[in-house]
Image 1 (cartoon, rainbow, N blue to C red):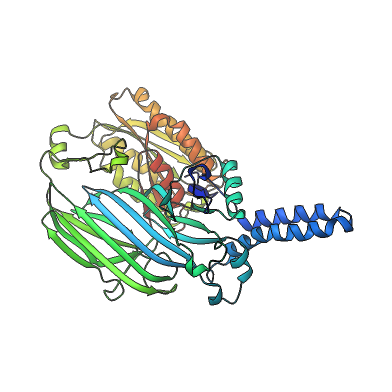
Image 2 (image 1 turned 120 degrees about the horizontal axis):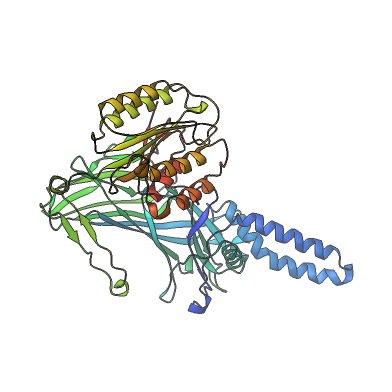
Length: 532
């Protein structure tokens, strides 16, 4: 979540293209706009030149002009590379084993031949090209690696390093014409990928130059709901693909088996809504290979940048009923990854809850009554609260209600043990609330965590009770600490070891869903958006 406001690099890699030795591998974490860095450097050097005597500066100016040609070429390319680089291949491979999804996106980039463009030929001839594109990944995806495949069987892996070192390294790699790739997370779903394509070697045209290949890998743990397991596929990269675009999806359920794989009724993920796609736009070839394995394939050629294909497509598969004991799997690992063991344990909820039952809960409902919640948002929050409090188990669960606006706690009802009387009293209290003033979201979270932790001692409830925080807000912080990264960081530090599970209901189409979702994910919870 700290990456939401200021872009932070997930992965970066680079190497000297000519030698491709392991000693040249560098890794960084973040980068500002290369054009800003380059122009600043050029101005600094120009000022120094102007201070020199004329007869000594002539050759210096000529030398520096050649030196800065490389930097300025990168700057121009960073602004507009559509006529300098082709994405020739884009291949998405997704494998699912017992809810654990692994996706690799293989991309091949190639510099266009000098004769195919009429502008920016200086940049092509004299310097590297920084190509920029945006990838949309599933919201719950976890990026695992970024790799670059160079010539002579040289593969570079990525690492994460400190902020300042990251800036310096990437700028140096780009200005020196070395191969590099960098991935930046702008929010929970959108990532910016930048790839440095070095200039062709001497006596070599762009057409004869080895292509640059980049592979991005992410994982995701899928969830079954209403007997279906939903997933998303990053089908289209948002730019032209000159040769081929392929998507391969495989799902394997060794224990339960698969009843259905549906991508024919796929829908585009457009953020808050899903848009149905017609079959002629996205025709997957779906096959149930056997009762435990299903595959889907899609392929297209020569796609234009304005293609009607969606960025992110939803589908689902329907597994057979789980065994009573659930499913425990350890996926097969490649030899070099033997130490990175990952397992999946899927419980059968009906069998598990029949014997274990639910744990007691100590719940704090934090309700936003600031001015931005006026109208339908606050009314929807009141309805949601009444529905949730009615589901608490009498004489087992406990709860409290904390309201906030300019202060983290404006009023506090409770805490009290759940029973018909306390539920009705709390519902009446919430119904009387009205919206006013600004939004101190930061203090509301911290006060709520404190109240949730102290509830057990306040009402002498069971020590086994799970402390839970439910925030009902539009997430638009306007009072106190408003920096989103700072809010998330302080909440995480206040909630030591994730002791309090934090959930949120985000009200309104303009709600800061990324902030609320990031806090929830970091603290063991989830977010549901409620539209007016």
